[in-house]
Amino acid sequence: MARLAVFTENGPYKLEVGEETYYICMCGLSNKKPFCDGSHKKTKDEEKGKLYIYDQNGRVEVQI
Image (cartoon, rainbow, N blue to C red):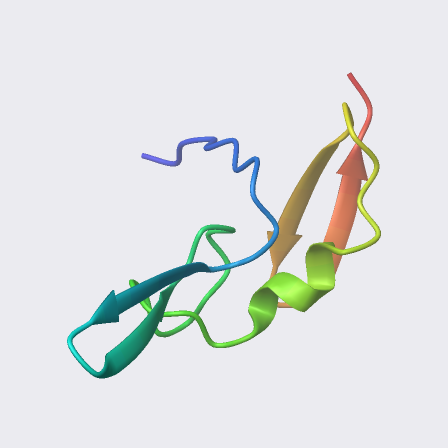
């Protein structure tokens, strides 16, 4: 069953463990979850309060 998840962040969470640094995906688009792969760059021009759906072909704005 599909589900709709609302992600409010458009950048990764920086996690430092000892001398290692990891970036955790916070946008939900990464193909390397839980790690960031840079996919959040697609979300930089999103407008607050609008709903977007992302798939393999790109982004679609949803009118509610």
